[in-house]
Amino acid sequence: MASTKERFIVIDSGQLCYYKNEKDYDLGHDPIKKRSIRLSLYAAIADKGDKSMIRLEPMGEVEDGLVPTMDGTKARTFEFFSVKSEERDDWVEVFEASGCKSETNYKEW
Image (cartoon, rainbow, N blue to C red):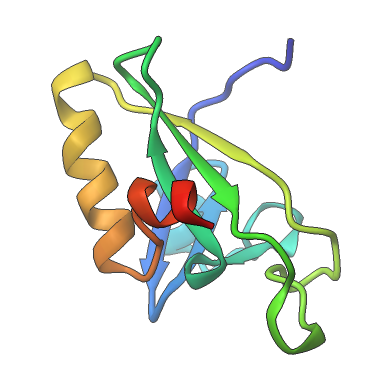
Protein backbone atom coordinates (compact mmCIF):
# COMPACT_ATOMS: atom_id res chain seq x y z
CA MET A 1 0.00 0.00 0.00
CA ALA A 2 1.33 3.42 -0.93
CA SER A 3 1.94 5.91 1.84
CA THR A 4 -0.06 9.11 2.03
CA LYS A 5 1.50 12.54 2.30
CA GLU A 6 -0.05 15.88 3.03
CA ARG A 7 0.01 18.11 -0.05
CA PHE A 8 -1.15 21.60 -0.96
CA ILE A 9 -3.41 21.50 -4.01
CA VAL A 10 -4.36 24.31 -6.37
CA ILE A 11 -7.20 24.12 -8.87
CA ASP A 12 -7.16 26.72 -11.63
CA SER A 13 -8.93 26.71 -15.01
CA GLY A 14 -9.85 23.04 -14.73
CA GLN A 15 -6.29 21.95 -13.88
CA LEU A 16 -5.19 20.53 -10.53
CA CYS A 17 -1.57 20.88 -9.41
CA TYR A 18 -0.13 19.67 -6.14
CA TYR A 19 2.78 21.02 -4.17
CA LYS A 20 4.78 19.83 -1.17
CA ASN A 21 3.29 22.68 0.85
CA GLU A 22 1.71 26.13 0.54
CA LYS A 23 5.09 27.84 0.86
CA ASP A 24 6.38 26.10 -2.28
CA TYR A 25 3.33 27.36 -4.16
CA ASP A 26 3.73 30.90 -2.80
CA LEU A 27 7.41 30.91 -3.81
CA GLY A 28 6.50 29.96 -7.38
CA HIS A 29 8.06 26.49 -7.31
CA ASP A 30 6.92 23.95 -9.90
CA PRO A 31 4.24 21.45 -8.87
CA ILE A 32 5.43 18.05 -7.70
CA LYS A 33 6.69 16.10 -10.73
CA LYS A 34 5.66 19.15 -12.79
CA ARG A 35 2.28 17.44 -13.03
CA SER A 36 -1.00 19.11 -13.87
CA ILE A 37 -4.16 17.01 -13.86
CA ARG A 38 -6.82 18.00 -16.39
CA LEU A 39 -9.95 17.45 -14.30
CA SER A 40 -12.32 17.10 -17.27
CA LEU A 41 -10.71 13.70 -17.95
CA TYR A 42 -11.55 12.37 -14.48
CA ALA A 43 -14.54 11.45 -12.34
CA ALA A 44 -14.63 12.40 -8.64
CA ILE A 45 -15.67 9.30 -6.65
CA ALA A 46 -16.51 9.42 -2.95
CA ASP A 47 -15.19 6.16 -1.51
CA LYS A 48 -17.93 4.08 0.11
CA GLY A 49 -15.66 2.38 2.65
CA ASP A 50 -13.53 5.33 3.78
CA LYS A 51 -15.62 8.40 4.56
CA SER A 52 -12.63 10.73 4.15
CA MET A 53 -11.39 9.41 0.77
CA ILE A 54 -12.00 10.78 -2.71
CA ARG A 55 -10.67 9.07 -5.82
CA LEU A 56 -10.13 10.79 -9.14
CA GLU A 57 -10.67 8.02 -11.71
CA PRO A 58 -9.64 8.49 -15.35
CA MET A 59 -12.59 8.50 -17.73
CA GLY A 60 -11.48 6.00 -20.36
CA GLU A 61 -9.61 7.03 -23.48
CA VAL A 62 -7.70 10.25 -23.44
CA GLU A 63 -9.38 12.79 -25.70
CA ASP A 64 -7.71 14.06 -28.87
CA GLY A 65 -4.61 11.94 -28.27
CA LEU A 66 -3.59 14.17 -25.37
CA VAL A 67 -2.62 12.88 -21.97
CA PRO A 68 -3.99 14.59 -18.85
CA THR A 69 -0.61 15.50 -17.37
CA MET A 70 2.09 17.97 -18.38
CA ASP A 71 4.83 15.38 -18.08
CA GLY A 72 3.35 12.96 -20.64
CA THR A 73 2.51 10.18 -18.18
CA LYS A 74 -0.53 7.97 -18.60
CA ALA A 75 -3.75 8.70 -16.76
CA ARG A 76 -3.85 7.15 -13.30
CA THR A 77 -6.10 7.10 -10.28
CA PHE A 78 -5.40 9.74 -7.64
CA GLU A 79 -6.53 9.40 -4.03
CA PHE A 80 -7.22 12.35 -1.77
CA PHE A 81 -8.13 12.27 1.91
CA SER A 82 -9.97 15.09 3.62
CA VAL A 83 -8.84 16.06 7.10
CA LYS A 84 -12.40 15.64 8.38
CA SER A 85 -14.78 13.10 6.90
CA GLU A 86 -17.58 15.69 6.71
CA GLU A 87 -15.43 17.78 4.33
CA ARG A 88 -15.24 15.00 1.76
CA ASP A 89 -18.53 15.80 0.03
CA ASP A 90 -17.54 19.47 -0.18
CA TRP A 91 -14.32 18.43 -1.97
CA VAL A 92 -16.28 16.26 -4.41
CA GLU A 93 -18.41 19.31 -5.23
CA VAL A 94 -15.28 21.43 -5.76
CA PHE A 95 -13.80 18.81 -8.10
CA GLU A 96 -17.05 18.57 -10.08
CA ALA A 97 -17.41 22.37 -10.30
CA SER A 98 -13.84 22.43 -11.67
CA GLY A 99 -14.58 19.98 -14.49
CA CYS A 100 -14.59 16.46 -13.04
CA LYS A 101 -17.41 14.18 -14.06
CA SER A 102 -19.78 13.00 -11.37
CA GLU A 103 -19.82 9.47 -9.99
CA THR A 104 -23.05 8.88 -11.95
CA ASN A 105 -21.30 9.77 -15.23
CA TYR A 106 -18.44 7.43 -14.32
CA LYS A 107 -20.82 4.50 -13.72
CA GLU A 108 -22.62 5.17 -17.03
CA TRP A 109 -19.33 5.24 -18.90
